Length: 178
Image (cartoon, rainbow, N blue to C red; front, side, top):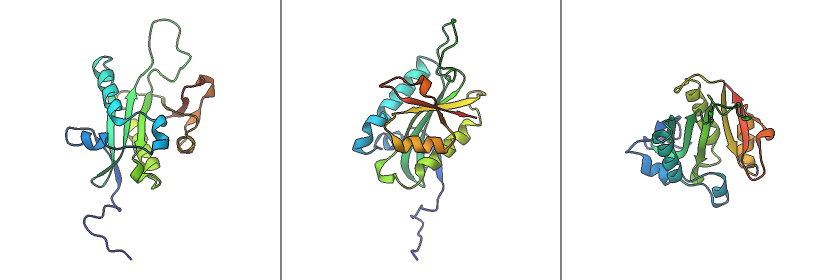
């Protein structure tokens, strides 16, 4: 049996940590495998998108590093209320307004295959269910249809695909009732 030391953080729980001046560079340096690059935007781009959404659109964004002990192993970014209200007919995408959206999610290539994705999604959903930006009935996300690993994970967590909102060349939306 292997002796555990204080530096061995394998028994430490996974956690979400807010992005700060202290950790943003470490999170920016996390990457997926080459064959997964078309499935998710880079973390640097995600930070830029979050900034614009918060400053230009005045919408809440919750970016988190996913940590195992002291090591960042992934990144997740959640936002709220991405639907447009132009005063006309309600959007065909009824799930957009007043819902939480898991905008970005990735586990670094060095840490994939350890169950961190599932565990991080459970933590994110627990956070969402505190309704930090307001009450909501739904949480949704979208993914590239060819990303079978993501599809299996999301469906196993209770997300339901909505192909009626899918258009060729776009991402597949999946919705979870909170």
